[in-house]
Length: 165
Image 1 (cartoon, helix red, strand yellow):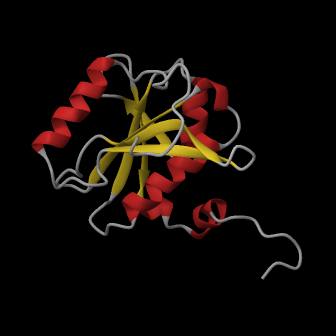
Image 2 (tube, rainbow, N blue to C red):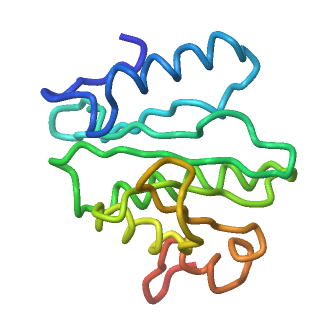
Image 3 (spheres, rainbow, N blue to C red):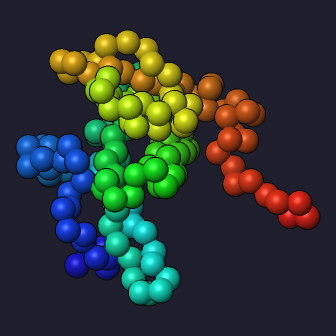
């Protein structure tokens, strides 16, 4: 296996049906230079078992648009909800996106009934902007200028204890 990780029972995570996986495969085949702007896999190290396990997939729904917008998506195995892994992965993806100077904003769609997803987006600095492009979805955004604010940066940085450098 290319990931060198255990694939848990019940994989893939919720909302990753065959249709969405086929769409991503077609996109990657049609856009071979879109490295990084497609699927990512998030692995959890288990030091006791000296192994890794896939716990989440996510990434971007393709290359940025002409106005510098990129859409993020994510899905975490339910057994790992509430442990901070989703926020950690989302922050990493957002940071990677904003490391590209052409990115002006990151957007995400979710459903109004997915409270955990909404909470995760808000925790990562996204704000609700209105209806999404798909029926029933709502749209969140994180503009670069909000991401780069000192308060937002401090929330993303690891907290250091007393006496830490």
